[in-house]
Image (cartoon, rainbow, N blue to C red; front, side, top):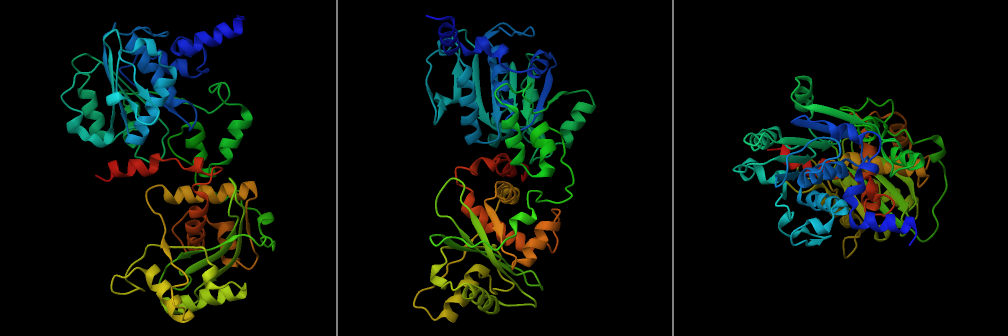
Length: 453
């Protein structure tokens, strides 16, 4: 066998042995830190979870390349923010875990390790848990180390520290500071209790990424997110303009080909200029479908669902589109107010369209927009990235939307209504497309349930 084949076989059999040579320039500073509490803070796709897995396994084996650790057996715990992330963390551990070290090795890519536990032949034990199990479930254990992949609520952090007191154990965190409170962690660092390490997303720190790949990653983020998502900074920056990828080149009168889907996005409001509907066409297939925004409706006075329905039908007629040809309609989730009696405004609007068209069956069903923590940022990323790629264009007749794209800075103001309408429907079209689904960073949605308590 050649030396290259022998090396590849050695790495395959014992990947952990070679991790110290493949972790980049920054990670050794974190790994070598002997502090009882330490934090690795970096951008998305930096390799934070892999770094946490390395640190945990080196402690489990008792063979750490950069600092002295307690001889095995040791007991450790990994805490993730959700079960889905738990399985992802277990996959990262398994990528560098030599199976011959494990007693009864049994890993499945869908469910992780049996019982979410890894027992080494040297007696060390690692259990993988979630923050949703709460402080009670995390009590009554004496641990040698805890690895937290994205920080939990502060009270759980305190409980986990208590589990380390008897054995004078270590706690380490890996995180990107987006979508959760971080001021208390800043206080921990400034008061000297937590040792902080921050690393940029660069080829030197991330040997698995080239500069072209890093540039592509950066292009998928909104401008105010990049300090956090690229460099692990605590806070983002105030944007000069939210949709930086939008340019005048995206405003044109190009019309879609014949075989396309037709869709409506609708934002509901009771004041003047607060009821907005966006009409668009979209390609039915492909990883990066093109979208043509064709027209808009904005109310110029206080309106009710019947008046809004008439205006939307007029907009469809301008384009020779029958209501039955609308494939998808997504609206805000408002109730009462304009609908009255607690009825959803979407249902009231769909009912008004049905009455005015005098069809046997409702020609348009208006589904509710998918909302939740992180959904707004996710939708805005989709829009910005679609403009960057040239997948999204806007017809000049959508004047209000164009104005908002040019000037909106992310505030809850009157510029946002057409943007909301566009985001609802564009998110529905693009969220699960292969070319776009990686723009969702699930932590915002998952962390919401823990901080809402």
